[in-house]
Length: 191
Image 1 (spheres, rainbow, N blue to C red):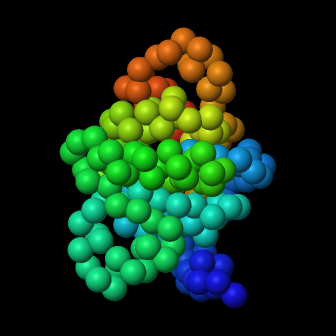
Image 2 (image 1 turned 180 degrees about the vertical axis):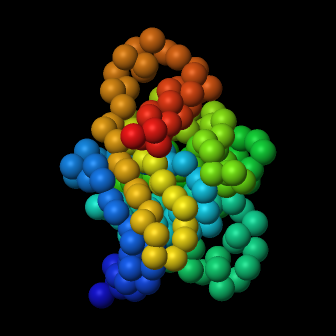
Image 3 (image 1 turned 135 degrees about the vertical axis):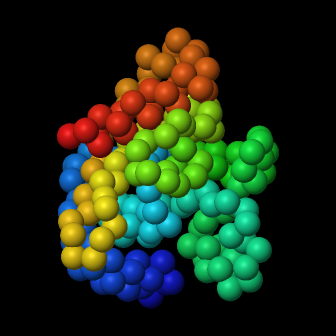
């Protein structure tokens, strides 16, 4: 058994009962092909929660600082996570993300770029729109609806893929595309 499925089952065994995780919208998740999964960010637990609820393996971009801790670096690397230097165009991370999507995998992004301090959806960074427009991947919005409180229900809602054809044809810019993605996440949060 490889490390990812084993770790996923262990983490699911811990998180699902602790936070009574309820998952909605899995029928919308593409079974194959590249997927850009865009999720709001309310806790450090968001990546493992998305990782155990998504029907496919999710490869995340994570802030480069996490890779400065040797044990954590090894763990993150084993799960296919790769570093991104925040605050500018990290060309290496961009290439890695586009490669993940081109190879037909799922790239998990938190478009806000950082956790929300108040749980409200913040402004998205242009990176999400860039990946959406520069790839042929399906773009799936996702909302994590908290709070992360022991034995309280935590909802993870996967939305329908955004119809990207129109936006790619209109050649909108990355900021506009990110705004559209954030609006779709917000719609899921309001349901």
